[in-house]
Length: 290
Picture 1: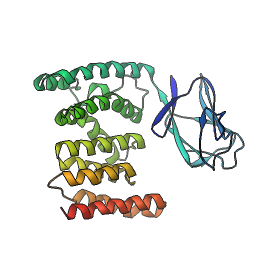
Picture 2: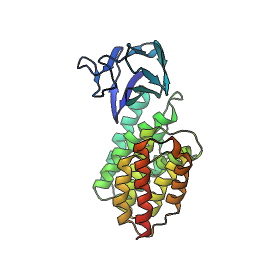
Picture 3: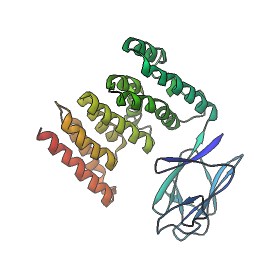
């Protein structure tokens, strides 16, 4: 089993031993944050697992929102907050990663195929029972659904990016559709979706909407985050302002339902989140004016 630290969309390897986090340049992860002490926390990786320790910092260390005392064990996908910075530790099944790399190599070969060959290849990579791309289903029963979602985007996202760059939007849509549908279903059923996975799903849906002109993918973004009951990332909102202007026959029904969900939970939002909600409300006005 290998371990990684996800911070600001970057994945950092956590080797065996001690990994220091703080403002000091001596730390393996140096954070430019006045709420972070020079040597704030230590993540330690041992064969038996991962721990985090507060090194006597002023503002403490939170794990999944709770301040810790002393050494604390870290589980897969646990959220660590240091000052104003949030990060996650996740476990990596190296066999699953090797499997994903091989599947990625095979899928990238499809971009040189004709339409009929490509459709046959995608169909062959689907599992008979669910229609989910085989690469989405990790071979290890120990892998979490969110980790599989991350691995799946690492695999299929690169292929979809190349298809979009070549102007083959319908192919990118077919490559990602089963994965995106599965993520939305998890959010709708309250099963939890890792923020990075949700953001990637929304970003690809917006890109596909812009490339294909299909309003259903814009609805997908609002329905996904309705299930999560949280505001869209600011970058996705900015992208939607561009995409909404391109897509015809938009119906604001999904957006209005999403805004209703946000208003029900807005008392828990900070100033930055309230500003994002105002930007989302602006999308409703933009759609109405089309």
